[in-house]
Length: 176
Ligand code: AR6
Image (cartoon, rainbow, N blue to C red; front, top):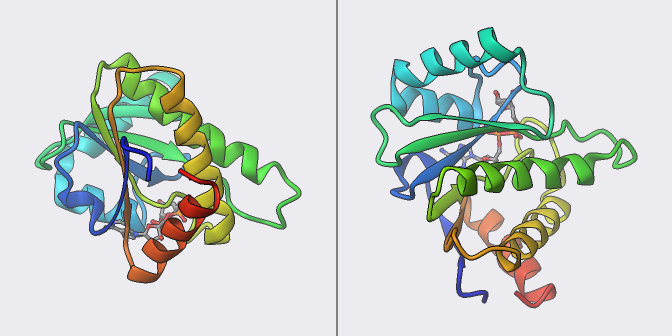
């Protein structure tokens, strides 16, 4: 396994990395899944900052990312990104998912962060098949880590043991 990439089963809201990533939607106003869990655990400060961002720059397009503080969470920042809704794989879904990871990583780098934790973006409500999503996620992170040396820990926090197994299998397949 790549020395700077970690795969665990757990809850993203409990991570003590510099940033955790939220699988948000374009409104940035909260929702279910990871998004609901982060806003519930982090408290109202996160939503207040999201609202300010939307007032300033509008909705967050699919594939883009924004950063807020993390309210009451252990992490210092929340990076909110919007993954694609999966339709049939013929609507740029892989590319948009890769952009969501890449833009989150770039925001972490711009903010001089050392560690970041990702959930499995788009594989819940947005129905991205998890094997395909794991491939995009792991490949994108691996390529990014090669290109810089500031961010030194990327953790994937998978909610179920089955999701963790799938990420582990894909990591082996692509020889991470
Ligand atoms: N920690 C880690 N992973 C989690 C957690 C948690 N606390 N809770 C759920 N997951 P989803 P999406 C897993 O639906 O597919 C929201 O309503 C979950 O099992 O959270 O990108 C937003 O507002 C799944 O594997 O995100 C958007 O409208 C993965 O996280 C929409 O859902 C992603 O599931 C985004 O959908």
